[in-house]
Length: 190
Image 1 (tube, rainbow, N blue to C red):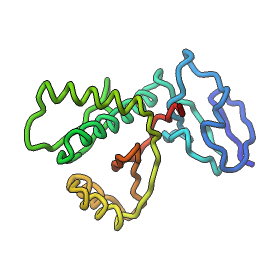
Image 2: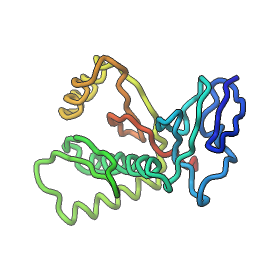
Image 3: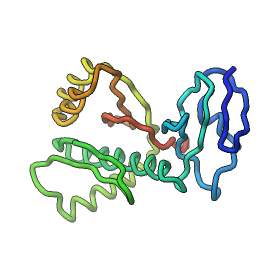
Image 4: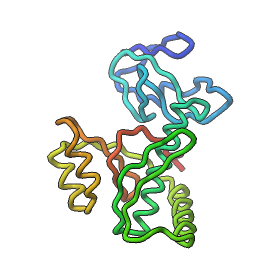
């Protein structure tokens, strides 16, 4: 058994391997907001994270800066997936959350047009409606470099080459895979 301590300093025992989502089921959230992710000992994690040791947990909603970061970080991936689906030759750079929103850097042979933006918005809406779950994957640097090189993602290769010899974190949503530290919003499971 592991012990989980909540923000109100209460604690409960759970089976080893219980997910963050299961631990937080029924826990009261501020402002009746949706649960987006959680912090485990101060580090943001997906709701699918399995707990393997005693931890302090803090649920994240959009009411917190960390919750907004998770929301906007997930938004960057949805935007990148939409752009890549519409413009397969685009190269992906980075897409972080920032104060007040997010952005994603794209390398494309031309500037996007107002018509492109309308198409991208429609594709984003279709991806959201499809409700692809975000699946965390880990790879070695030695496997991640050729993975992104084969996809002509030179910026991702450059990022991976700059990492220490540690597992490389990627996320899959549908058929789209991107380099990413996470965490991400849960699927609604519809």
